[in-house]
Image (cartoon, rainbow, N blue to C red; front, side):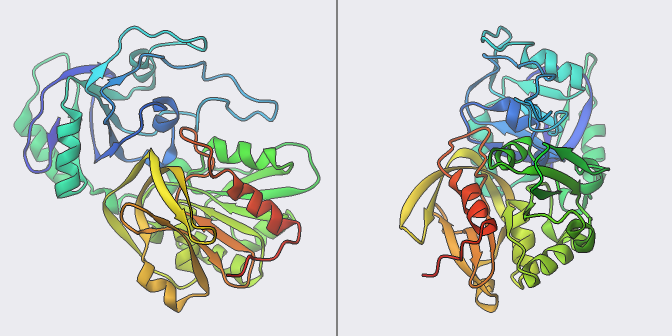
Length: 371
């Protein structure tokens, strides 16, 4: 493994034998590597897991789906992270739902991994210096380190990559048979979001990231969800324009993660990139309405600038208790809410599934809670 500052780390390869380049990030979760690796928000990134032992419960059967045809255990149809960095890989796995080992799955998916790395020391470095570009090389033959360093220096930076064509659906997909529907704008949506909307009793219509407001309204949706996803929210101008129309026309709308940033931009706020982001299942957030702290699952590298909210019609809803960053906003007058964390979890705690019920309440005529 080679970092952009020239640091070279040696370990034991697993998964696929190949070379990848990407933004190196860390996740503090103890479990959930299957859901994490298949989360489209990790597209373009090399993922470091801080928990020291990974893979001991293996990987479930990817073909298992619920009655709506949504995958039960995977957040998308493939591994989205470009590579995986762990301290110790469990080559033996045991679980009632076991289908294959993590090593077998990553080999099958063509994704490289490296073990025997001091991931906590690596995480400390990322916390001090911020996320960085890196190369991960797994090879059966000797690795030309200097050649890889040259290739890394010329690799496209994460901030300049265009992810939507890779993570968004190419065609409209429908889940369920109900007459009332919710449109989910797919900027890299997790399957758990689709499952949670289905649990509310609505048919889900998943549309491409650049679907216009007028095309969305052809489905006569009861509400709209702007999904999570990778990269800079400013790289989604079409989605921002759609969000502006959703706000203007007071369509009940929930933004999640990238979707929250897009709603913020549509409402006149600005966004910025965090030094090392929030990725894990133990991130505490304060609900400013009831002064209660919730433990949340998160995966994001960009955030809404709190100083820019003053020029918008949004109130601050949630804040992060660690660094006071924006974790949720809601419109002062209209039926628009957004959270930076993942209320669907998967993996993580389900403390904030009530956010989906908030959307349901807005759909069914509930008014915004005024402070």
